Structure formats: C-alpha cells, structure tokens
Amino acid sequence: MIKPEHISDFKKNGVTMISGALTDWVDIIRSGIEYNLKNPGTYASENSTSEGRFFDDYCNWTKIPEFEKLIRESPAAKIAAEIMQSKTAQFFHDHVLVKEPGTPKETPWHQDAPYYFIKGSQTVSLWIPVDPVNKSKIQFIAGSHKWEKLVKPVSWADNSDFYRSDDQWIPVPNPEDDPKKHKILEWEMDPGDVVLFDYKTVHGAPGNQATSRRRALSLRWVGDDACYTERPGRTSPPFPGHNMKEGQKLREDWFPTILS
Ligand SMILES: O=C(O)CCC(=O)C(=O)O
Image (tube, rainbow, N blue to C red; front, top):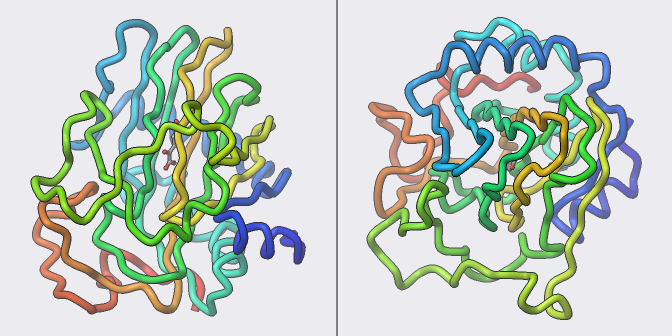
C-alpha cells in the first residue's frame, strides 16, 4: 500500500497522501464519530465559531469500540510504522474534527508537536476524512517539519498563548502573506483516503463553506525513538496524572504499542 514515493515525500515534505488506504473502515469511523458527537468527552470543544459548527474532541478511543477496533485491527498501525520507518507503532491518541456546512471558522496554522509531551523524530498523524473533501482541505507547509524552532502554540478558540513562556518559539506563520516563501500542499480527498503528517509539519484548514459535512478522524502514532518530554505548562491533551518523567518511554497501559 505504501510506495517508496510516499516515504520519500514524507521525509522531504513532512506530509504525504495515500488514496484509499482506509476505505474499508469508513463506515466504522463514521459510526465512531457520530457516537462521539452524541457523547462528547471532557476535552470536547465547539471552537467559538460564529456560524455552523466546528466540533473537536480527543482521547475517547477506550470508550468508543469502533475506534478501538480501528486502532487495534485496521492497517493503520502498519501504515504508521512504515511511514515513520519504525519497527514499532505506539498509539498516542485519537482526535475527531467535524466542520459542519457553513462554518467559517478556520483551523489556525499550527504544529502539533509543541502541544504534546513527545520528543522524537518518528511521529505521525493519520488524518482520515469520512466525507469527500473538496473545499475545506487540510493544508501543509512543505518542509516545515525541518524548521529549527517550533511554532508558538496558541489556543484554537481565541488565539491566546498556550504556554506562558515566549522565548523558545517562532511566530505563527501566515503562508498567504508570503506565498513565495512557503509551498502549500493540499489534496482533494475521498472518504478513506489518508493524509500522513509529522507532528512538526505546520498545517491548518479553512472553514467549511461547502454544502456537505467535513468529518475527519486523526490517529496519532509514535515510533521507536519517541519518549516523554516536559513542556512549560499543561499540554494538550493533558493526560492528568500520567506520572512520566523526562526521557521515559510513553507508558504502555495508556499508550499501547499496537505493532511491535
Ligand atoms: O481537521 C482540521 O481542520 C485540522 C486537523 C488537525 O489539525 C490535525 O489533525 O492535527
């Protein structure tokens, strides 16, 4: 399923797209997302949109049997390991993102890495839409996973600073201001196509001005060299009481290694 060009694109750009990688799992993902919408978890957010709806929620996979089945039994773990060039694929967390038609709220440009307590070069998110995506395409800045400094994390709801410390981050880029400097990668996608991106790849998405829904599930994985690192404040997701220390492998009882 993964071709050498997917691996070289992922290395070079920090992102690649595999058509039809999880088509057989679309119904089960849809069903899990609908369950999540009806049963929001502790971290569910409506992201202050003026119209429509931009729902996101994460870390619910142990309560949603469809997601647990997908994580444990689908080809997702193998795909994640292959693209990370890792022997193992350890599951970090699930993330549901739903933009209903007529939602102007964009997903701000960001990297996932600074919000997470993860250090390591082998990380990947699998972003899996379960509706056709023509307008509200997820977009990536090619090569941004190689930037020396991380982008300042901000709150999605109001763009306020996520951590108090300011010195270690570079400002949030606006690729539209300088299209010559930043190459944007994006794809029209069918349900079950999968975009794979490194936790350090800068990405964002416009609102959903289409007449159809845009429901997606992101599955976050880490590879052989990933471990826990301290951040200057509460991470997102926070995983309260995790009790891990700098440099430790992620605890197996919360973050199972699916492929070993
Ligand atoms: O679906 C979106 O709008 C953004 C997704 C995203 O930021 C992610 O999966 O990391």
